Image (spheres, each protein chain N blue to C red):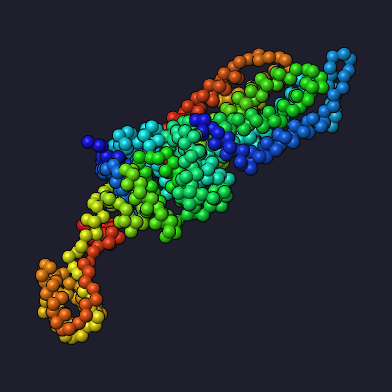
Length: 308
Length: 268
């Protein structure tokens, strides 16, 4: 049986200010990330996401609790050589050029020079920086982000921890990153994604955790988060009193807005009965759609407490 | 550590202040060669000059001592600290530290890589400034300049102690100003403490103040004594007291060990 790629148990972290005031960042986070999956971490600002990532990477020590990455302690340098990390903000020396930067990052991860020689041009092509010769100070935010992705992939990591990987990218770049993440998952890599782009998380993640006030508020698959509400929307070509009366005979609790009826049928038979009644009026039915929660709606409910 | 060292070395030589220091070294080397004139008087070789600033007959060791003292002076040390401290502080800069310290290399190795790059930069600047004139004098007079190499090492040891203090002062992650101030403060204070009996004890007469100043003197690096030893070594005196060397060495090892330990424990 394989162990999870990431496992935390009751992780606490308190920051202490100069005036000895304690600021809790994590209040007992327990989560598990299975190998070969894409895991999404969501949460409002100040939820503790960055602190959690820092603890996982050994950049910060927990006040209490344990964390394991690839069966090792987060500070273990050998384990870190099997991890790729893209921080939210990268600040590079102004003069540095992409190949030199990647060479240094690779050497810090113990990647042999011969491998780097082959891999750096490949990765630069892959992230769309193949022909770029200018120094980092002339890079746009999107270019920096692409370079960050390249350095995260340099050591062919088993586990990728990505903090806002599509931040600053144009729609095409975002799609390229999404495709890249999916192909990495297909190759058996584990991806830990910290992102504010909820639609992106919805599209690529196998499992999502919403962190709120330093605690895991919800953990589920995107499908579970966005599953149907049981309501349907029926849109007709034109609405008149006859149409309203036909609908009222079946869907008493439904509400009309222009030519759209929103109602919650008891079962599928009641939905079909409504369609029959409307067709008998006669009126043309343009669409029938189940009403779904978006991840964004669910997220907002969780963080505003509506979902309690 | 080698990767961190090579990168930091490259980083340091890409900074404006390092270029100023290196440029100044080259200018200094050219100026020294230009202003000295060699003349043979009364049998053994005697060096005449420098004709512009110190118009006097001097032996080769005496001229080398002047050059050496120039590179251990306040201005040179300040320039070197201004050039090297940002290399250390940038190691812990937000946005960069997350990249480097999350990799498979220990924090202490990255710290030491940057530290030794700073020391190398100073060493290179001194070598560039002094070696041409030393070579020129040897070529003209055949008087050996080899003692100069030991003097350069002693001078580098002195700078290494100041840079160790700068490394320690980077830990609060407040940029390069604090490391520069700390290093320069230690440089000045250690020079004053070396002369404490002559300069301070006439004002501070209490026994306790003497105990404190003596203790402080023992702990801090002996930068002015090392400069003096370096100068005397060129003159052929050899190393008469090893105390400044080993106490400064212990200071460097102690400060770097403490810095590495604190960095290892630091939450970023």
